[in-house]
Every structure is written in structure tokens, then in C-alpha cells.
Length: 153
Length: 268
Image (tube, rainbow over all chains, first blue to last red; front, side, top):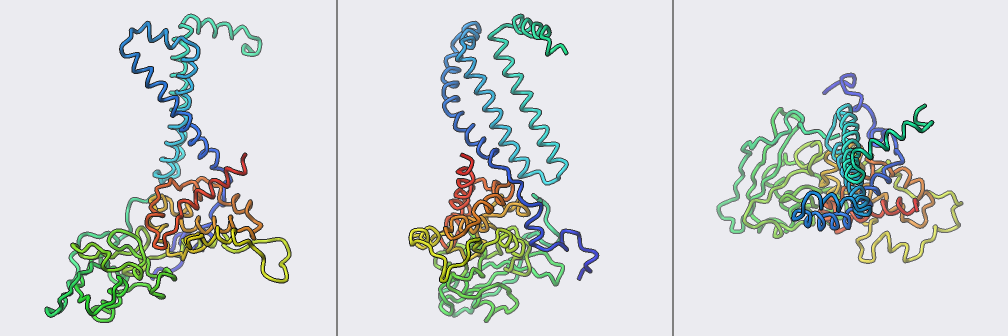
């Protein structure tokens, strides 16, 4: 029989103390709800995008970029990118929380996932905008922003 | 916290267990492979095989276990009490499914194979078929499963309409109040296996839902506050093992969905 002094802290603690733990974080609803809402929104968006991509296989590069140049198409694709990456991020976060036991690895994993998907999302959105406005136009817009008093200070 | 390594002497290494044969005169024979582990020796778990004469034994798996204990091997350890599916003591894994040994008929088991009996999965084993459920009882206590009301107590009992009572008992007798706390559901849930230290599990959440929907209770908001947590509640990924294994035919998954719905309701 082990003496009590050899027991780990967690073994000495009462089961009720362990069960209550740090208490409720009073959050979790937004995460759960967002995952469902984005899933719902992605149904029509994915169908729309798949139908259009299917046509794009038979078209030239110019025709494809022209299609993406239409305002509603560009908005649709950016929405798809934003929602699918956000949905994927929420899902990955749950997987990390479920299966990564070590606290430090878990925190690093969660941070990395967030950085990765935000970076990927912005890069993809930039690609769509670039197709729409062209490289020169984008640079022009950015140059213009430097002239704003707020951004220059 | 997910833990993928097992404690010392807990892994089943296909060790050949003891064989007990029925008498040659027996006509109606059936074999039971039963999980054996004792904290008193340094051995790993094994499956002992008991062949019994069904003509000398009652119809349920629990009858077979009692027959083994009384006539073949008195060292076999298991919990049992009411033998009619109301106390929840004899919950164990029979032929790969968590259920109550007292309500599971031997006839219902696969006739071609030995009946395999192991303790409720993913719990520390006290001995043989007895799992340690202390943490689960504490989780149950943590949701404060009693009526909470600030209004002064009336002269007689606090009233509830028959419809409101029906919600708890179920119009078919399968409402959340019929849960016997056998923990077949909780120990069948993979999410509970990985995060059982923080996730409350289907059984406790079903009980929490029972008190949230009790119209006599005045602490609904407080109960929802305490459950809104990524781990306590939202570790449920609607795997539904709980509902498919419940030996009482209850629906813990639906009760967890009820709590999520109530939390959503107060946001809008």
C-alpha cells in the first residue's frame, strides 16, 4: 500500500474537487454555433462553386479570370474561402483539444492552427482580388493608402 | 486528458486463462470468456473460460455469472443487486456492448461464439468485472442533481402539470428521469475516454438535462451557466454510442442536444 505522501497531488484531491476543476468557462457556445452556421452556409456555396469549376475545366485561362472578375463571382469565392477556412479552423481546434494531451503542445497547436488558417485565408483572398484588380492596381491602391494621414502616422 | 499508454499490469496480452469444462453429461452447454484481473498479484489480465450447463442455470447472463461464482469459481468478482435492471450494479461489457448482465439474455448472445464478458471499458479496474466509477459519481454530484428553488416551500408538495412530469418520465417510460446511473453510456463514449477528466459524459449530462427541464426547479439559468464550457458539455460530438448502448432504452444524445438547444435559445 502506498503511503499518502507518495501519492500525486491529483490522487489526494477529492473526486468532487477534481470533477468541479476550474469551473465552467461560460463559453463554448459561439464556437459550436459558428461551426454549424458555417457548415450550413457552405452547402449552397460549395454546390455553386463546384458547378462553376466544372465549366472552367473546358475554358481558357482568360475566360476563367474573366469569370472571377465578375463582382458577384469574386464575392462568392472570397466568401467560400473565408467560410471554409474558418470552418476548417474550428474543426481542427476541436481535434487538437480532443487528442493532444500535453498542455504546452496543445496551446502551440491551437496558436499554429489559427496563424496558419488566417495566413492561408488572406493569401487566397489576395489572389482573388489580384485577379480582379490586377497587380498594378493593387500596388496603386496600397501606394495610395500611404498618402492617407492616418496610415502614414 | 487523452492518455494512450496503459498503467502497469493492465494490458491484455492474449494470456491463456484457466479452462473450466462442464460435465460430459451436460447436453445444453455454453462457454463464457470472463475478464479476470486482481490487484493482489502482479499479473496482467486474462480471459478465463467457463463452460456451463445451461439447464442448471437461469436465462440471463447474470445468472450464468452467479452460477460460475457459486459452483465453479468463488473468486470471480462482480457487482449485482436487484437482478431486474433497476439498480444498475451489474453494468458490464457483454459481447462487445455495454449492458446490464441481469437484463441480457444468454439467448440474445452470439450462439456461435463464447460469450465474452469484460468490465465497462476505459475505467480503472478494481477487480475482475468491477470498474472504479468514483470519478463519475463525483461528476454527477457536481451538477447538483436536486431540486433548487428560492420560492418558499408550499404547504404540500411543489406542483407540476402531468405534461411537465411526462417530459421527465417520458410518455413511453423512457424519459431522462428513468436513468439508473449504470454508466453504460458514459463508458461507451470515445469522447469521454479521451477527455473524461473534464467532459461530464452522457449519463451526467442526461441527469443535468432532467433538472434543467424540471418545471419546479428555479435554477435553470445557473445550471446552464455551469454547463456552458468547451469541455464539460461541448466535447459531445454526437457519436451516439450512448443512445445505442443504453440498456434502459433512453436517449442521452437527445438530452445533450436539449442542453445545447437551451443555451442557444437564451442567446437569441
